[in-house]
Image (cartoon, rainbow, N blue to C red; front, side, top):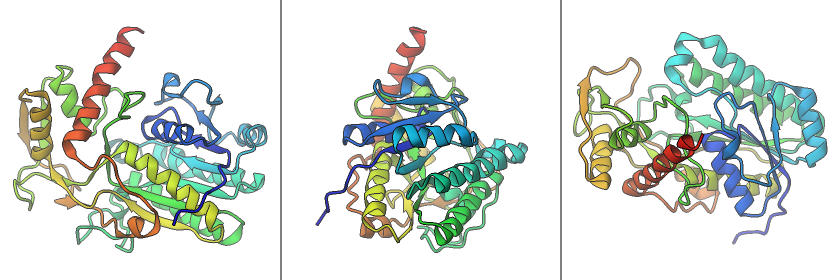
Length: 338
């Protein structure tokens, strides 16, 4: 039976970005006091709801963090700020070790100094690298094959060691493929040139791209294209709230959990869904696979379902595509209005 949790003030880092802005909406909708810090390098000021305190700045600015923690009475951090493009991490690894690892260290240090007791970290299935088995469990060996995955794994290590030494507990949520948008179209994936498949596909369906490149048709899957576990961003945001409630209820315990639906769709199945929802046919260009892409990457989500009362509301591919499409149309209006 769920226990009523005191709603403590939460600071969301990267709260003007894709996943962070959905977490802010979920917190605000549920009545949590929430504030946002974002440097707006990839985030958008308009993505933060009116009335939510906003600080434009960087998470390595420990003086600014100390001021925010004091002004807001922060008792929990949800950490989404960072860089997320895997190929870029290969070509510019030091950017990723700076943005995702060194800056996370500064954020954790500031939280410890301020006595913030709870920390939720946006981790990734990329920490597993190319797993030998799928679905992937949390105890699957973590062998990242790119600096993005390694930068996130190093942050997991820092949180684990910090929680052993200081009165702070954490939850590391390892995301699979995040997709979709707020069902009320209040926010969504807004980054220009995004590489997420569903984002790319709906852009193509609306004429914003000429085609969709399919990387690899010789994978060991039903149709030869890579299979991934797509999770709706609003379900992911709900998982963060439930994880926070669990951290508050059990202050001596930390958590590490996969976030996915436990089933996968191939690239061609996703494109078929976009064709079906839009009643259009996307131009598909088949090409060779990219180095390091596993055949299949699906979450074993037994742990999160056993630990939290998490019941996904949008675990349906067509629903995810519909919400992404609605947001893409609204984004055209936002950009058209300057």
